[in-house]
Image: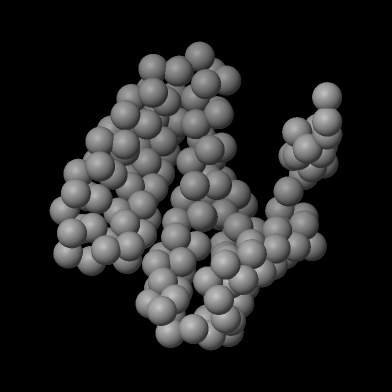
Length: 157
């Protein structure tokens, strides 16, 4: 379906931003755990305002691709701020160890998006998300604690 072909580019951009989303959550939780909620809130506020400004500039000109770019750039900004604040608070983070597995899963997912680009967008999103999580599970990118948390969230109370 040709009407969705252009949206594959936006999906690829958003897939690339997942790497930063994953690491940003970890560093954000770290700041909260060390009683630096103000730095977490400041980072989220700055990146949110930055994202709104970028969206207002990029969406009118580039539509959903502009929105994807704004998201990616905002996540990169958030990453820089989170990394600065965690490092400033004497928490050295081994970025290579943290991001290696999500990067591998992202590369596989982006490859699947490119391979599946002629399918309906909803199928592309669904299949590529499943592939991402299967790869993350296969390479042990998610620990037992995260799996247990996901399991507990999906159980009826």
